[in-house]
Every structure is written in C-alpha cells, then in structure tokens.
Image 1 (tube, one colour):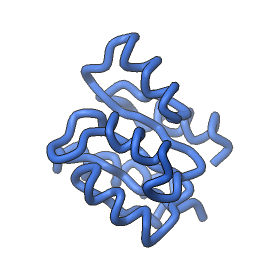
Image 2 (cartoon, helix red, strand yellow):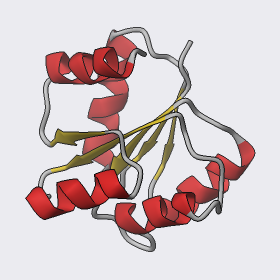
Image 3 (cartoon, helix red, strand yellow):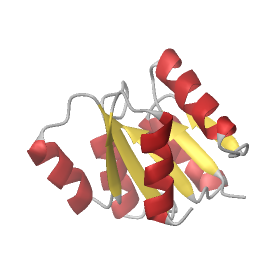
Image 4 (spheres, helix red, strand yellow):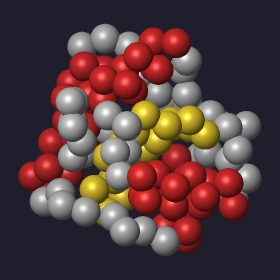
Length: 121
C-alpha cells in the first residue's frame, strides 16, 4: 500500500483530501500543517506520495521543495502540488523544484484518481 503525506494548512481541505484517499483505498495517510512539520515527518518516515499545498504558514510549499532539493530530508518518490492560486510561472517553478504533478484546487475524486494513475500508484 502506498504511504501518503498530505501537507496542508486548511483543515477542511485536509479532511476532504484524506476522505477522498480513503474512498479509493489509501488508508495509510498522514498529515502536516506546514513545511516545517513536513520536514520533521520526512526525516522520520519516507512516504511514497506527498500532496503539497503551496500557500502555508511557517514554511510554504516552494520552500519545502527547495529544502528537499538540497537534501534536508528524504524526498518522497512522487510529489503532487495542489493549489488554487498558482499561475503558469508557479506551476513551472514547482516542477523545476522537483514536483511531479500539479493538481488545481478544488479537485474531484476523479481528478485525484487520474493523478494517482498517472503516477502509477
């Protein structure tokens, strides 16, 4: 089973994404509220898949990607950035920083499943 880390500061979004993942059989789901918490978790555990919000307090998604790129913690095998506010430059920037896919918020269960299928998870 694929282990998943959701890095999201909005409680409603976190609950929604967690519920969607559970509906499709992903029960090993953990969460972090910001990049600082995520780095700490990634140093302890190595999830295969990470869903990453861009706009968060303390350390945003961009900075977390930069930290992973420089080796501050083990990088998940697949990183999906989720954001409602990212423009084309942001999307390209996160790919250059190591994100594998971009998922615009809000998204549906079908869109989430398509991301996982593309990732081979």
